[in-house]
Amino acid sequence: MKSLILGGARSGKSRHAEQLAAASGRDVVYLATAEAADAEMTARIAHHRAQRPAGWALVEEPLALARVLGQQAAAERCLLVDCLTLWLSNLLAVEPSRMQQELDALYETLPGLPGDVLLVSNEVGWGIVPDNALARRFRDEAGRLHQRLAGLCDHVTLVAAGLPLALK
Amino acid sequence: MKSLILGGARSGKSRHAEQLAAASGRDVVYLATAEAADAEMTARIAHHRAQRPAGWALVEEPLALARVLGQQAAAERCLLVDCLTLWLSNLLAVEPSRMQQELDALYETLPGLPGDVLLVSNEVGWGIVPDNALARRFRDEAGRLHQRLAGLCDHVTLVAAGLPLALK
Amino acid sequence: MKSLILGGARSGKSRHAEQLAAASGRDVVYLATAEAADAEMTARIAHHRAQRPAGWALVEEPLALARVLGQQAAAERCLLVDCLTLWLSNLLAVEPSRMQQELDALYETLPGLPGDVLLVSNEVGWGIVPDNALARRFRDEAGRLHQRLAGLCDHVTLVAAGLPLALK
Image (tube, each protein chain N blue to C red):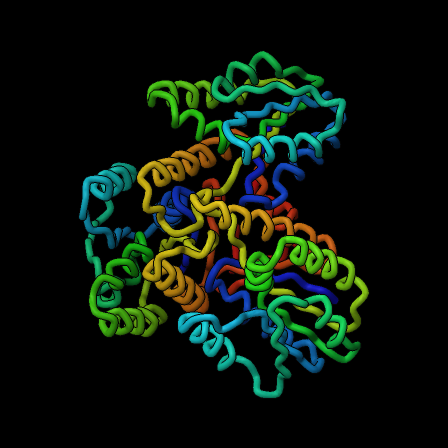
């Protein structure tokens, strides 16, 4: 089963995904895309880590998501990717051709993966058009990514105030 | 039937409206409000145009939306307006009295139009309060427009990740 | 009955909460958290005030929300707090320890209040990550507040284009 879990900042989307992972009855592998580039990000990573069960395996991968998903996926496992927004942000910082390769690899790999895959991502396009061209590009790419993954996933959920709303 | 289709940037709202138009069985008139003011906007317009069926008529009107809707509407037609946010943005650049005239004209004209009318617009008020006074005014006007049109439309849909959520 | 009413800017969330208050059949006490710090805010407050029934009592309190809720709540009353976002914003401007005290006081007080309590708040985390550290902190605090209150309320509603969507 593949699920896409969307929501705004601090919407409770990660916690919702973690509850789904815990309830899956499978061995959970937490796939973190964050890189601790500064103090604020280090604190956010530590905050998320402190809330996860100790028994979960942790794999950190900022860029090659499809490859790591392919390596880690197994029938008895639940992979929890948190989050796609940071992965996309990491990809925007490398060369453009690499970004498209990684996106295409994800779209090709995802449908065939065994076990459960939970993908967490931020809604970022519900505000005023940003002044910044990179921010506009980022929200366009994030929107396209969500539409594409929504088509590939069995379930899509929007989380607000910690409460899930089923979109698919 | 009148429908309002709302969603964030790259949420798939235009594609959803286009699917509704194609499924209507009526002759589709695509009413574009965008003006190609710069290279980025020209690219966005070309991107949208490439995704539309060749048989659809195209009418471009940045300001006088109610007048053009009145001229184009017919029992056998489906008018697809994409998008109200750009129309509102165009109106904010002309004198204020003109803007209110155009808004009032839309509210008066819409209920009596024959055929189908699909109105696409961006949700822009779900982020942090913008620093910029014009941006704050824009999101206030957009919010009021959506509330008013939601009252006049038969259906209101919120689109996220390409998936429709019925609000009315 | 406790209700949390969420929505973007000009989504119609205040109007929706006011309709719930009017339909409650109870004596309505409107608890305003806004302070008229500048001309724009003064205009917004006047705009909201003009839309409320004359028979409603008005209490203004920018910071000590839990205390005022405790004083005002009664079995025959409906308290309408508009809005939590401004209250949080006011608290961010005082010392941090006061903010946490006020948040904790609200979480302790709310469940035991008699009568109806309607809490209105803005969704602010669905846009691009703000450049500004204070804005990031604000949207993190707002998101946490909404999650916590959603757990304590009987009903949670998301409003878009004036239309309510039940989350709980």
